Image (cartoon, rainbow, N blue to C red; front, side, top):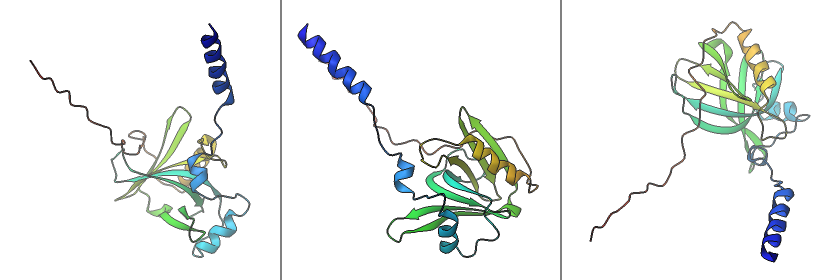
Length: 184
């Protein structure tokens, strides 16, 4: 009985203590909303026009028609003519370009959603990418901000199509179990 009470007490303590970890995207990508436009303009002086929207994001890059792509945590800057997506180089303390999309070269755009996750899918002639905006503190998708990015791109006259499904990162490797039966 004493062991049961001790086990319940330890179990309740563990459950009530919770986890307080930094989301991985926040830990690996520097983003300060107030300083972002200054920092990104310094790192990329060729950005055209004022930045309409910016924030943390997750990005998948693939070929057209594929629903599996390379996954990146990132920040983005959306102007009237282009979408700039950057990663963070912690050694050089500056942003590095992951993707740059000229909105006039987009052939199609789609918005796909699954529960609280939205993806803006940008389809070019030889590349397809999916962008999901994250909240400033990282860890959660910001569906309203993702929809605003989609609406801004849609206003540019890009053809809107139905999505072929959410883009996902490749499945992680899993161990293969091969049962060996030895008869006697």
